[in-house]
Structure formats: C-alpha cells, structure tokens
Image (tube, each protein chain N blue to C red):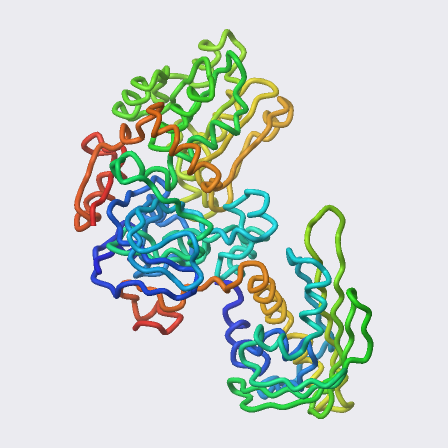
Length: 205
Length: 388
C-alpha cells in the first residue's frame, strides 16, 4: 500500500538490511540497479531515542559493540579512529570497506569518512538533548562524494533517491533495540490460507 | 490449532493453522480459555479497516494460561492465568513511560503504513489489520503475546473467565471514556451507542459519580440492558435526540457526551443517507453520525469523549458547534495497562460484575455464525464469548 514499488526496489539494493552501521559508519555502497537518476547525493534521518546522550554516543563510538545492532555486518575491526568493515548483503554480495573517524566531540557529534570503495562517503551523527526529559535526538547525515562524470551522476542519483527511507527505518530499528530491547516482529507467526494473488510476502501461496 | 481467520468482507472462517511459537525472548504463549468478538471486529468484518490480508487471525479480547515463556520474560511462568490487554506496549519508550500505552513507539513491526495514514504509528494491536502491526489475534486456541512483561496481568483462579475477560478491552475502554468526561457532582453523561463499550461506559460513569446517564441506541435489548444499569434510554429512531437530551437536563444539555459508536454509525435523515453513499463509494471512510449528534447535544464547555473507533476520514463534521461551544475532545485507543489492576479490584470487591454484558457463549467453531448474529443484532445479541 505504501510505496510498495519503491520499497521493493530498496530491499533489492545493497544498502537495505545492512543495518545502521553500513551507511552511517561509511560503507562503500554498491547500487547495481540504479541508472540515470539525478539529485543531490545527500541524505539524513532523525529519531528521538529515550536514552541518555552519553550512552548513545559511547555506543555509537564503540564500533565493535555497535556491530551487534547491525545484523548483516559480519565483522568490524577497529583501532582508534580507524576501522575495517565486512558485510554480506543480498544482491551486492560480500563487501568490505575502511572507515575513519575524522572528528568527534563527546557526547554530541561524530564525523567519519569511508574509503577504499567505489562510493566514497562522509557522514556525521549528531546527538542533541531537547529540553524537558524527552530523550536524545539522533540525526544522521550521509553525503556521497562520487567521482565526476556519468558514473558519478548515477551514483549521486542512487544515493539521493534510494536509501533515505531505509536509513530512517534502520535508525528506528536502532531506537527500538535500545529502548525495547528487541525488534517487534510478526515474522513466523501463524495465519490461515492466503489467497495466492494477495500473498505479497510470499509466505503462503 | 484452530483459529478464526478473515477472508474478506463478511467472510470469517475457522481454519486449522500452525501453533504459534516464541519469536522473541520477551514473548509468552497463552492457551486461550475465553475470547470475545468486539464491536470493533465488526469494522473488519464489514470491510472498513484497510490492510487486512486473507488468512489473518482475528481477535483482541482473550485470556488464558501461560504455556511457554521466552528467555527474557521476568513476570510470568508456565501455568499462570493471565488476562491480555489488546494494546501491545514496550514499556520503555517516551509514551509508555507516560502511561500512554496505546501510543507506544516500538510495537508496530510495520510502522510505515500507519505513518503514512496517521503521521506516526500507534501501538501494535492483536488481530487488527496490518496497519496496526499485523499481529495474529486471539480468537484461536493459542496466541503469542509479545512484550509480555508490559501487558498481561495474573488473575486469581477463584474468579471465572466471564468476570475477567473484558479487562482485555471493553471494560477499560468504557471506563477510560467515562474518566475522560471528568465527571463532577450532578453531571449528566450521554452515551451514544449502547453496545458492549457503551454498556461499560454507562456503568463506569455511575462508578465515577454521574448523577444521570442517558443511553442512546435503537436496539431494544441494548436499551433494556442500559436501563438495568440505571440509565435513562432514548431510541434515536423515534426521538429527536438533541431535543430529548435538552429536556432531560433542564435545557442545558449533557455535561459530557460519549461516542461509543465510531465509524459505522447508522445515521437517520439526509446526512445518514449521504454518509452511507459516500462510504459505499469510498469518498468517505467513516460515517460520523453519532459524533455529529454528540457535538450538537453537548452543553457549552462540555466534553466529548470518543472510545468508538475511527479509521480514516469523515465529512461534514459540525466543527462550528464544537468550536463555538468550547468543547473538549478526548479520544483514542485505550491505555488498557492503566486500568487492569484498579478494575480487577473493582470486580473483586463486587462493585461491578462485567459478565452482565454477555448474551451468548459459543464454541470457537461457531465464530462465523457468531459474527453474523452480532452484526445483525439477532437473537438479542449484545456480546459473544467464544470458547476454543
């Protein structure tokens, strides 16, 4: 019902399911199906998480423990400000990339840059405490720095169109794991006979 | 197990489906001893709630015995007898911390649908469409209860299911509706719709100190039941409701009005016909006749409390009347968790016996007949309890 086409497309692409870590920490992306779309190569998402700002900052900064919140990331090896990431993603297959934290101000901001991939990116996460005991606002911003020319334009288009919704969803899942301790799910629960034409999830035909 | 499943408008079936399993460490599995059909299930049955899928298991009013416990569950163990609130809540978010349980941020697995329709997602609800999370419901032999530490309560073995079952929804829903009226000494409360929620709103308004409660419906058995609770009754098919309420309140109008009807009101007159036509062709998703009347009837500065479910869009609401009379609107899905313990105590000390509302008890296998009977208000049907 809601942007089914678009989300179907999203799920087929490399970033989907990568969890917060991949793009927010500066993954090398891989967008095999996009072509010819243009737009600013930037995306952002914000959620408010009902946890103290220091806790969120420290969790984000502790790259290796952060991995547990990004289920498709296979491994993170961190040393100081530098890290190496490996992930196996649907469609895109196995990916690896390096990231470097370029600036940090505990507990308010982390900036990073991803290198050694086809799509160089930089990103930042900002933690802000709103007045009145409302938790912590977490804003993530990712900017692709694609090469020029035709290839660059394709990548730019892909970055701007594709993952912002997915990125927001990943951020919501991050919030949910921290607040509720689990992700609400209905996958695997029983149901009656689905009509073949309506079994959009493919679970029963 | 056997479960009641939705297959389209006016089509519910009893099917054999797999037993539910623990899917998250916070889950428990409940073997259901009693479950009920809610008036709001009729909105699904009549096809007015979007995002249902054929095969969805219905039901959000159920209780039973815990038979399996997830590894993170602290408050329950196998063998506990529990009542399960229809709202699924995480207990940790901004909303849960403020006891706004039905607005929980974290329990709708598919928030995007609700965000598109409502701006933000409310809590997940059992058996109430994929808009509300797509959770399998409790009109079945077993149900999975997620976030178990933040929902169900244990209930004593000494009290029968019939007294406890309605803690899941309609008793708290009627009670919250009455509480929203902020009832003061001498108040008159008008309750539009004397279905099960209306019946509990009437009882609750008296518990909270209302001087006079007026029940408005057209079904004789419902009006009779309301009268037995001490309410004055009005049959809207042979009275001008607004005038009649004026007459019953010395010309002032009721201090508060409760719309316990919601999106499928049976309007009379021109607007009733217009609403039906619009809803039939989906120009309007909800028929707000009771709401309009309640707005019109309410005294200046009064409160309109809305437990009746709305799902989408309504037309021609007399906002001018609401504005110029300075009405307060209070509404929403019930924050059931707030009422479980206090209302259990009210039952225990004998101030109310919720089983008064039950007119039919049937085996789960007869759910299709039960839905039809409840929809058509046949055989004096007010509330059906199903036994798996």
